[in-house]
Amino acid sequence: MTVWTEASVNSDAVREEADRAKSVGKLVHTRLDDTPLPWGFGEAQYVDLRKWDGTPSDPAFRKLIRSIKDKIDPPSEAEKAARLRGGSPVAPTRADGQMRLADTPLNTPPPKDDPAGKAARLKELWENTDDLLDWVAATGQLPEQIEPALRFFAAIRDRETPTWTALSFRRDALSDVLSEYPDLDMSHESLCKRLKAIVQSVTDLEAYINPTQPEPGAPDEKPVQTDPIIRRSDFEEIGTQMEQLGAVFKGDDAVAALEPATLGFLSDAVAEAMQAARKKPFGERSEAAQFDTLKAAIKRVTYGVGALTAAEQTKNISKLLSPAAEEAFERLAAELDTYFDWLLTYF
Image 1 (cartoon, rainbow, N blue to C red):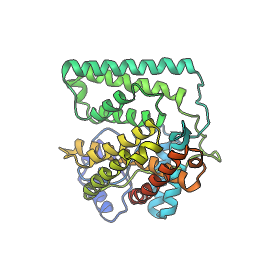
Image 2: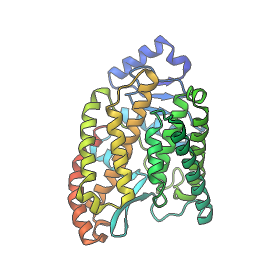
Image 3: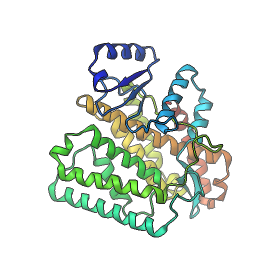
């Protein structure tokens, strides 16, 4: 196991040992600070311990233990599918006769079940989003690293309350940009101030919209999730497959079967994965950020597609849809099955 810090990144001996482990498929590595990963190591699965609270129950540390166990005893395809579906942050439910992906656990209130408090914090998020949009329009400055997240917040501005899953993925993406590009704070001080305000607004919303999660060790605790393992040689195939999957979500069956917010969540993730796979990196920071963006997008796509295909297999939700949506969903799920099997090969 390799632990990346400023000192280890600059150690030829550590990089040599890590490269040897990576070449034989045995590398498990972690990241403890904001130092960019060495060139070529962004593609190997790593565990981000930068925000680890030091306890064994912390999700990041549990992910590390899961990664080590998987290296020793690799899970079967069926086990991976069950783990991804069981640990998914979204699950299917019904909304106005269509299929909707909602935060899990379903039918569980957030820690602060306070509609007025939620409304106030949503208002603050939209005000901070509008402030950033106005600043970008006035200055014409928009670093490409934040463009996908800004597009997302602008798109959900007029929707119903977004899911915590969608918000948290975008918050984490903005946080990663702020940590991966510290020089952004110097060259775009006003921009960074606004980005940090959005990150804080989303964080403040969590207790009001994210369902209360099971305690570590509880019987209903979600399985620990690992990140996809992606190599640069996979990028071309990922770009092609995501382009085709994007066409599926633009099709009549997807529009008929999925409610608009769910369709937007999936389409956004697919588009981001496709764009990240086709982007040309420039330097170590850019490569690490590209891999992080691609992995996060693929996780969102896999969670969503996995939840939808599971719903069709059990029929527990699909049979409650409107007749037209049920027929469309049956055809859509049959298409998505193939994509879910393909996505599993990266985990």
